Length: 472
Image (cartoon, rainbow, N blue to C red; front, side, top):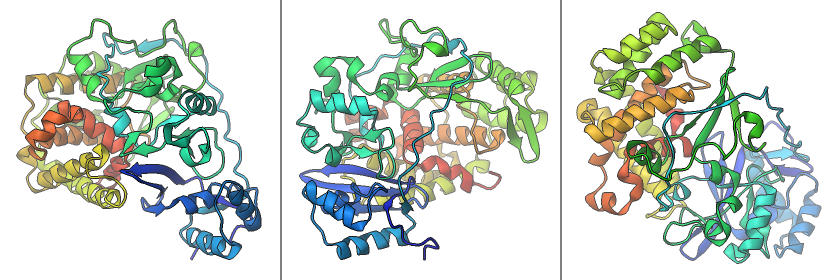
């Protein structure tokens, strides 16, 4: 039972996230509880009511507002529906507070990872994988005006775009997914907004993907999130006309659109149980990692770095030695990582099966990860060393991760986070064991399994598995 009284002016809580899906000819909405990980399937009528429960209306007001957009219900029916959501802890009282605008810190120079530019293959892998494609209000309005017939967004925006979180306007919305794909993606994998009027009309998140911006107190380091096969393809074969990770003409963080998220590194971080380090020491440590020669085996190197952090803290010289001569990785130490991930992926797969189509890339990726994790939990030695091309891709993963501090977790000790990254590399090496030759030939996201692992773990909540591993 929920301890809170039933709200007099209800809205969906911020940890409740609703997304519209179209699978075949069927339309429905899915409510994701980000606290429990559970998902609830809703019909048009249920969402028609919930979309009017914005915290400013009582039950009679919600019914009246819903009737104006073509959804009809009795107050008693609405009360019973909302009572079930309240029982699950998914309702809040009153209008949601406006999101606080976070003031940016001091302007700092932009420092992109050296030698990298991006070429998109135009096959839409990223647009087919993520659960949310985010639009700011002006971007949503522009998309609806430019292509008004996409899912009737012009006539019924409340049925097409859903708030990024909760049921009240929150400064951003998410577009529906059609068979797991962004609704603005065409059949060949190209963005219809881009095709209609150019890259500048796409949402800011799409324009800047996959760039990450991290303020370390000295500069804003910029590197790609290794979450798309195009990132690793571009790293291995630098494209002649690749795009920079920073907007043209931008030299400092003051030149960036205010909507670009710049993450600030904390002043201190947990290295291992009972041991902390400073941001200044972390900067020197990660610079040493990023500038070191590429290791022969990146999984071995990450595991060696984890041990170095535990024994020597953030000593750049010790990090350099660990990378140059890493001890052979003890695969047995990673058995608990794969068991924990298999459990998380199995739960995610069961939920996905209730609303995702069989050919949905996200659903298939979760199944592949579950199968590979389960196999590695049985025999951690299945992850054979990477061939030369994949080894170079793994080395770039390490360099980019060190340059923009992607190897650091906000809620895990650094040593554990480094072992988590080693486990992801081993998982990516084993992934080809569980998908078919037909999959590999038809699915461009499988060209670089490490990128698919990274995107799926973050985009679908599987990265929380690391908390289930002893020592987290």
